[in-house]
Length: 200
Image 1 (cartoon, rainbow, N blue to C red):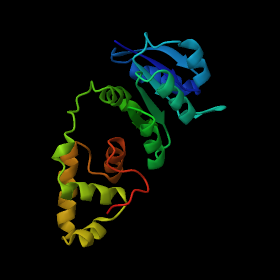
Image 2: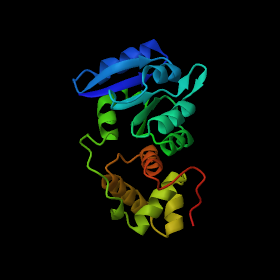
Image 3: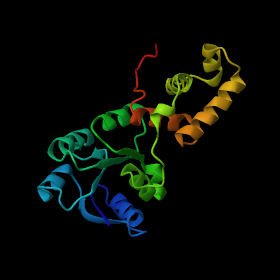
Image 4: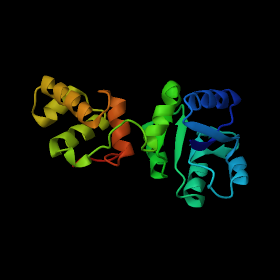
């Protein structure tokens, strides 16, 4: 049984999270906190916790500040961010603070599996990053920069159809769906790319 705390101010979302996360019996929510302050008053240590689910937009508090406090006070306690904000810069900031995952609220129906994967207990195989060769890495970075397949083809002196094929093969290799946002989320999470990064 994985014990977790939720920091979320919206009562409806608290109910939805609890309903989804406890449905299959792998998780038990031991605390539902409205604010980060409530959480830190409730827990002086993390002996009874395995994970924290943190909302970004909280009244009178900033999710980044709470994430920073979690990192400093309980560095061994994993946390995931559950948010409606999907900007890559927001995701990158949370990963830099130690978040195990940044999960969109649009994935609520898959919340349990997303959290299990974040904890390394899911069905996803571990990525072997050394499998990425130079061409695949360059392709990944160009995708993250927002370049179209035609633009990438011109840069790499390839046919556009070749780039489309290579994107499909790269998605399979990374075990993600062949969508731009998935490539970007992967690259940010595992440190291959960050917003504003320049490709040499």
